Image (tube, rainbow, N blue to C red):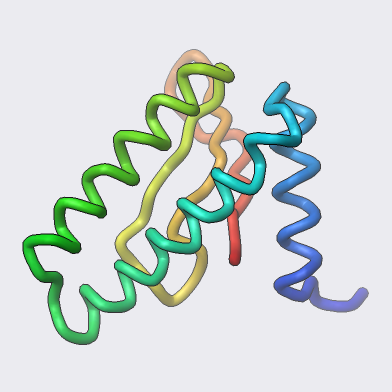
Amino acid sequence: MRELTQADWRLVAAAELGRRGVPPTKVPEIRRLACEYGRLQEASCNYGLTSRQEARERNIEARLAVLGSEFGISFHVSGDPRGATVYITETNDKDTVLVRTRLDC
């Protein structure tokens, strides 16, 4: 079995968002936010963030929360830039993560 490429992960994420009821018109916005969040986490790791970048980071997290509540999904953000920094998560009633799909650029 071959390893999934970044393009494969993009398709998986788009399919997962669509399966959860996110309209195709919102998928590019969510991907853009995930990519920008990842770039900010790389900058944070390498150089630290400026106050403007910190504000943008908070705005992205808030926008993802709004989009998540709008479509009944949950996003998990990670500050570790070595992998994906934004995930779609599905939890059970005990807050155990059942499914975690990464959002890549």
